[in-house]
Amino acid sequence: MNQSLSTQVLIVGAGPTGLTLACDLARRGVGCRIIDRTPAHFAGSRGKGLQPRTLEVLDDLGVLDAVMAAGASYPPMRAYDGATVLGDHVMFERRDPTPDVPYPNILLLGQWRAEELLRARLAEHGVRVELATELIGFEQDRDGVTATLARAGGAERVRAAYLIGADGGRSFVRRALGVGFEGETLEAHRALVGDVRADGLDRDRWHVWPKASGGPVALCPLPGTDRFQIMVPLPGEEAVELTVEAVQRLFEARTGRSDVRLRDASWLSLYRPNVRMADRYRVGRVFLAGDAAHVHPATGGQGLNTGIQDAYNLGWKLGQVLAGAPEALLDTYEEERLPVARAVLGLTAKLHHQAADAKPGALRRGAETQQLDITYRGSSLARDERGGGAAARVLPGDRAPDAPCQDREGAPVRLFDVFRGPHFTLLAFGAAHADTVARVNARYGQAVRARAVVRPGEPVAQRSLVDAGGHARAGYDVDGDALVLVRPDGHIGWLAAPGTPGQLDDYLRPLVAGTLSPAGEA
View 1: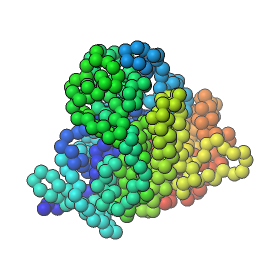
View 2: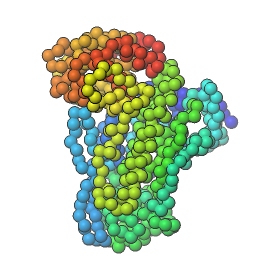
View 3: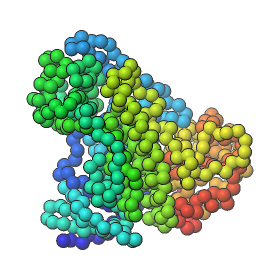
View 4: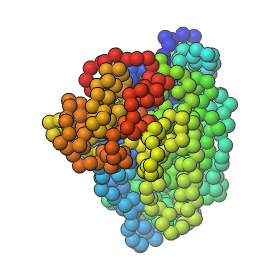
């Protein structure tokens, strides 16, 4: 058995969660390996909807342009009874971008394509997925984790500071830890899901047979391909072969349509909706994320997106601790993410049962599925040091809004442009903080990047942002002088009015290792 060189983080599972975490760690200079036991990359569209908040994460990771070019808006749904058209409707009402929400609409993109784009981004950081590599055991001690991997040519032992189980609902890591996975499997709501070519249907619509025997049948066109995702409910204990011929027979029997020909399935699977979550996300130096920590019904498009959010929350915390911050910071991963998963599970279960019961409007989606309102209010990392007054609309723990501003030359710059990267961002509002920006940048260098946010007509320094339309102050609910610290994952960590550098230092002490020296301009 070979003993490999150590790595800082070993990620088990190369789905969207594991890939997002690997991208986030790699851009921080954290040494990581990402393994997957499958011999080839996943070729299906198990998940196909990227929510607005996920698009913001992908913006920060530098992959959004490629994702937007590959994806498409959700098409309208056309309902049929056999060959009779019942009418068209939309699942998602299109929304226009606003100053604080630049990507307000869900994007349709097959999971395999999203993973492909994340792998390409990861490769730019010099990291590649190690396929046909299976975790078969691990032990941990106070200093790290020793993992045993099985791969062609024999076994390998890897020493890592931390191990992340992003290995799906049947997670080996979770089971090896003995972590509970409470909930239920909705066996009565089984379905066949897969990607097929379909002759006889246009690709401008999502085709649905809501009155089909056994439950609604649907074919959704996947952008950038000539395939549809098919979903056919399988009530009771009905058995079905996972072949395109069997799917064709099932489709005809359910819909009465023999004029639609299904062929060339690239992926077929028997899907059993689960509503389950782990009772812990951390055991020592081992963490659970994505489906390994929570599994959701497909309704609402939340599972893939929630896993990406897990990775985004955990990534910056691992980076800070590996750079020397206190390890207690890692406890906040479970503190913040477990309640979110619980709430999302409640939402997806409700949506699933509404759809199964064919309730009116059950397929329509609104703001509740966009994940823009996910907050860490009440977290130990959410600190508000504003004095008294009326209740604020924006609180520490909330998602940090975007806003269009200008630089000192008048060129447009968004707050999301300023946030992009692995650093904290300090927004300094008001003339009282003329010296704060220079002090913070000198003290923390690349770890915390401070920007003055000034009104038109106020003095403009080199790193100032001119809030020409007042959108930054409106978005952060700031009137006078204030300091706003945005975490690397785009949530507000600390708010103070008027605020002092000393208060900021006190907040950052357990998050940023030591006193850092300048490392150049942002």
